[in-house]
Image (cartoon, rainbow, N blue to C red; front, side, top):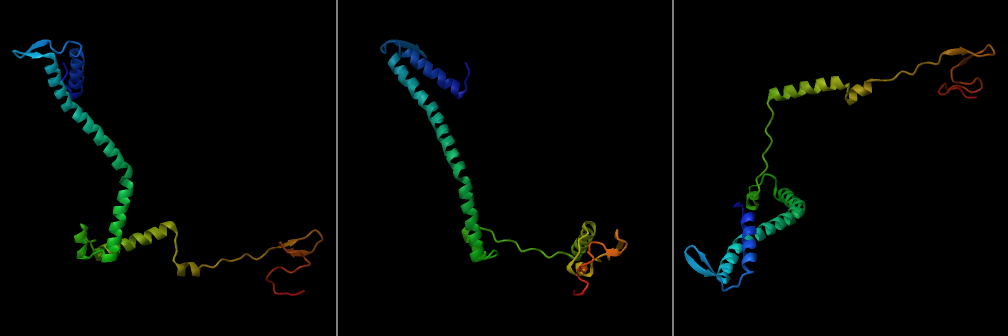
Length: 176
């Protein structure tokens, strides 16, 4: 006989169902005493309640857990928002935050000279690797527009590339 709770409950229910088919006045010899079937069914039914209470409590726990998990994101959002609002209104490092169960934010520690040197070196090497420039470096770079090369036209005359002979090239400053 297996003794897991579910097996015990199933066995109890099966025994009760079987005993209910007998007349309630029949007697059984159990542990050296005569007990009527009706009385023994009542004892077994009492035993069943211990197991069914656990099953009921487990299903209530499961449904309560599902309900909690369904609203948890909303509650966590409210909690986070409330903490943020309190820290903003009272001060992130105020000792009053402990009244609300909150810890004050720690202040940032100053970086050491060695840490600042390493960070600056990393920044320079990153800029070099990515070919990034600051505003002054960008301003120092000027593009050079190549001068048009003269070409020979079919009629024997020379013209600038991209410009027709009747209209002056853009930016030459001549007026017609």
